[in-house]
Image (tube, rainbow, N blue to C red; front, top):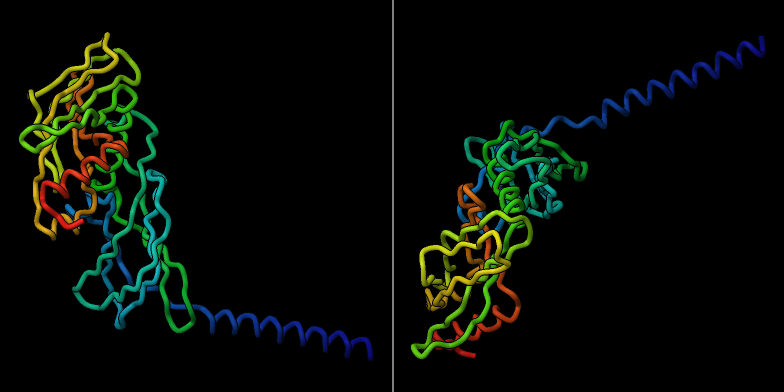
Length: 282
């Protein structure tokens, strides 16, 4: 009888402990976060290589987001960013800007489709901060477009690259320079069909196009550089003053948007040039 009483007591303790675990699980279970997510990109995002996670709140109370990240196997990602964003209820949509990193090229650019993406958020409530993963609409035309653009540029870079070189002052106060097209591989001809300047600088080519022949290692496209804007807002707020686009066509393929490499020495020359040209204080 004594052993039976002990066994009954142990069984009772186990039952009470199990019940406590169940109760604790019920008590600590948090309700789902009533957020929906979409993905958009505006013109300002394009220059920064960012997108915006667009959040909507279907619940009855605002939701505080303290961390955000875009995750997809099709992009290298840039890691989470800290934020202090209150997502209000109703029809208002709230944007959080995040980076997406470079595309992961797993085949020819034209055949690629971006894999599913997730908005990973850190959400703060009364019990602390928890991680929430919100699936983004799939398939995504935006992410597929960004992936293909990155992989097209990578394909072109394996054949040729464009670099700004030979900067020198002109008698009229502008600069002479060349955009040098240098072969990095293959034998296909490469045509530089267009070059452009940035917010602060104009790049005016001497000819409409320049072709790197199959037997050539490099070819130069002469350009004239001048200041584009001198107002303090443009000079003080510009994010990427040395981001000059070029369009390169490999063989018979359509031209691909790329960026002209501007070495550190050329950047220093351009910086001093715009300060002098615009009579900016030193």
